[in-house]
Length: 184
Image (tube, rainbow, N blue to C red):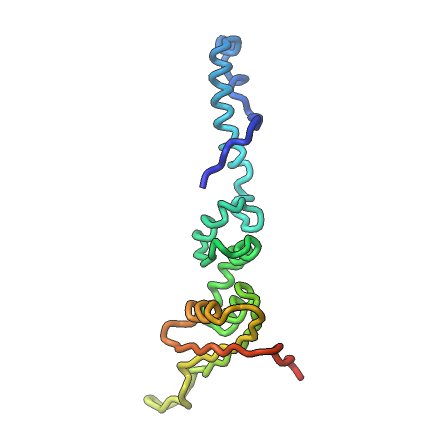
């Protein structure tokens, strides 16, 4: 990634005007510093706009891939630009929820546009006596039910596999029709 020169981009601080009087009248010195102005104007313009480069919604598209690497956002260059920007913008929030039911549902909705329901066995217990038996079985399986419109099952499975904790087995069920309404 590199910034390219904008033709005829004026320098906000021309070097020729800052030269001592002895060199200010020298034609060679003025031409030489104008060449430096052409090179430095791009650098100064980029530095003047640095906050925009760090905002995923404003950053140039070629800078977005680099910005995504800073926040460890897994984005595919083939995805639409708007989706990549949204994933980079929400990367910290998504990392905070990674491995949770909410994080899995949000990432599936954001990345693939599918509605999902996650059935988790829980796996949390408490007892006042040591070495007490664990409640129930099957807590190591997570069932992800997805209502996919036009999304391929393989893409859903790959994303679920990447987002589920390593020690948990995930099963993906792709369902037809719209999801049932919440609350009746």
